[in-house]
Length: 379
Image (tube, rainbow, N blue to C red; front, side):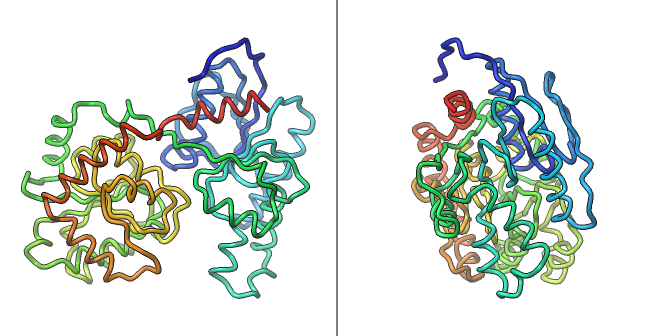
């Protein structure tokens, strides 16, 4: 718990490429920034784009980044912000994307160097894209620097140490920052009925939920194939609802090709994800790559069973809680298909639900903003 001991108000600069209110990184940023503001600190935010409401008291500094490609614009942003910050007397500079000049970096993304080596040929390292992002990452993790690093999951620390020899003392493993009050309001029984009625579903049908705005990375195609692989009797009782922002056409075509277009619903971006979790019977998260996965912990908090791939950073919580099925890596579609089929068992889901609620009640999944703000004040 935070205890006010007369901390002198600070001027804080928060830096992130873009703000989108439904992304996991962006939601963590907002919780941390609001906690810092609650303690009396002044908040300046440097970003290329801001979508959504601006909290009262935040000063948003929009940077007109130049470049024809994403990596060029990110580099332009980093250069401009570094120059601006050097002329201002900030007490602390906190970054949510990799760039030079940070006092603290919130590591919500995977190690870029490790990912590039795993996914691309050696020639990729000669591309402008690789050189730009690798340079920005080096500007945070190089061993001679002093940037403190907030980590969501332990495995990423080992990757950064492997590629950059970053000293252990600079890493801080932080708890999650789930907002329980927002998830659990309004009453679950009322929400479940209303949402399912709006989707044209009865109580005997099974609502499978996916949440995430990068449909390709979150594995929506894998989910569609798993639904299509169900026995006909099970398939007719299942609906897959996808919450998030993205291109739906490729997945609609895939569902049509596999004969399950009537089983798939795209709901777009939503503020009331907790309501849909209350209405759902299962969260499906077969991501190709996921540093953490806040949605997994939100599911635990509301007692929603989970089927998730092992490579997701927070998948270990589902495993520890015994609140669902964790599909082992390397990924095989057949393993996901079988896990989904097993998860349709009502009695099994009841056990997972009870386990999830117990785990969420007895595990710190909530104090990220307090931890981060305490660290900022200590630094």
